[in-house]
Length: 261
Image (tube, rainbow, N blue to C red; front, side, top):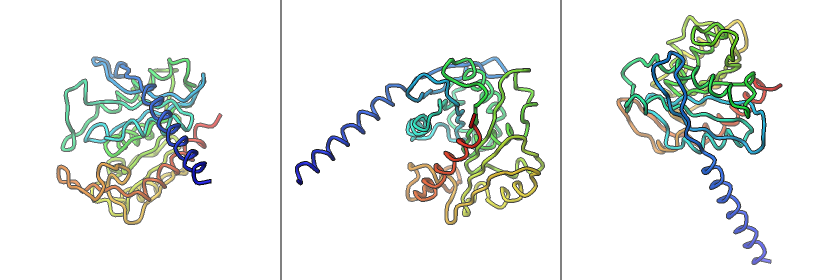
C-alpha cells in the first residue's frame, strides 16, 4: 500500500515538473513597437494550450523592473486560459529602475502590447485586459481612466476591456473617473502606496470598482523575493503568502467576469 502511495506521489511530482518544463519552453520573447513610436519594446509571451482565440492579459511591472517570479505569473495566467504578455519597459531603454521619477512611457508600451496581441490569431482582440504592479498599476489606472478615448489607442482599433492594479499610487488618479471595469488590490499597511488613497478613489467612482484591502499586508505582498521584508530604495516591501494567494483568486474571478464573451 505504501509503495503504491509513494509511486503515485512520485508520478504526480514528475508530471508537475514536466508541465513546468513545457510551460517554460512555451515562454517566448517577442518585440513590438511602442504606441508612441520610436522604440521597439520587448516582452515575454505565454499561451494556453489549444488553438484559441483566447482572451489576453498585458502585464506591467513595477519601478524595479520585471519581478523574479515573472515566468510563474505568466504561467499561472496562461493556465487560467489567457494569453499573457509581460512587458519589459526597461530592457530596450537600458534602465534599471524608475522609482524616483515618473515613467510616462509605460502607457505607450502598454498600448503597443495591446496592438501586438490583437494581431495574433490566437487572441480574441475584443477581450484584452491590463494588469499592473505598483508603477505599472499606476499605468493600469491611467488606462482605465482614459477608456476607449485614449490618444494612444488606434482609432477604430482594439481597446482594453478591463484593468487590475496591484498596490497602485491611487493619489495620482485622485480626480479620475474610471471608464472600464477595474480591480484594485492593496495592503492595509502599505507605506508606499497607501490604502486610504485607494479607498477615496473607489468612493468617488460613479460605477462599480472592486477594491480589496488586505489586513496586515505591505507593498509588494505578492512577491516571494521579499519574504521576511526588505527595504529597497527607501520602500518597505514584504511578501504575504495569504494576501498573495487571495489576490490571485480575486484576479482570476475578476478576469473571468470582465473578459467573458
